[in-house]
Amino acid sequence: MDNRFLSAKQMGFIVPNAMAFTLIGLSKLFFNDHSGATVLAYSEFIIIPLLMGILSAYYWRNLDLRGKTLSWYSCVNSFYAIVLSTVFLGEGMICLIIVSPLIFGFVITGAFLGKEMFKRRNQNLNISIITLLTFIFIADSRSKHEYSNMVSDSLIVNATPDKIWKNVVAFEPIRQKNNYWLFQIGMPSPMATTVTGYYQGAGRKCIFSNGYVFGEKIVTYNPGKDLTFDIVNQPRDPEIMGHIDILRGQFLLHDNGNGTTTLIGNSWYKLYVFPVWYYDVWAQSITRNVHLRVMEHIKQLSEAK
Image (cartoon, rainbow, N blue to C red):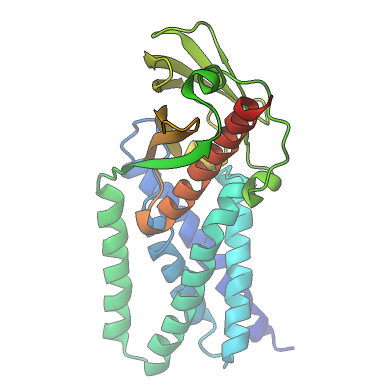
């Protein structure tokens, strides 16, 4: 096999990944607000993968790669980037599963874009596109990123509010198997809740399956109607909890007047990963499944005779 072919092929894997980690490192060094939160801007999941694909295409421009081969090489490049993220950025498995569709999609897109760019051999156009993407990356890295949201879920419990209330404030360990696929592959799921007292200002702890504990403080204690608590301490880990802050939780009970109660679970959170149009779908799904696991348990406890 031609040595030049091997060299160009290998450089198409090595240089783009080196460039990506250099840009990410520089953005953290010069553009991070140092607030303590790990903010990952959309440019790190869109612009950098596009640049990776374009740079790969530059090294592979004379190899006459067909579409399937170019796509395969781009997938391998994306896989290398994900593995390196695990080693050097400390990202967890769940986080990488969530981010991988963006990385794979935009590295492949960049490779095909680069193939067309270098096929035309229009140097001014090529430099303009790369300069524009670099400018967008810098501008986005310097921008302030803020996003908060609230997720609400409800279900009907065949019991009156007074029978449900004690199970809302604190509940015994959940024994049911997880149905949500992210919980099944290792994402922490809620297991139990304890309180220091049944009054406003009391401490509350939500314990997750891997031993993580969310420290909470009850800010509204209205028996049979409203339990609202602020999150005062939460774990930081390589998974999604490192990129989201849960701000507040709430359970509302509405007496339906027929022996049933509508149980409503609300959560407020702040997101540190962007683009929002992608990551908030995941954040909502995870939050919703945390709600439903807890609320289904409360329902089971309250309806038990």
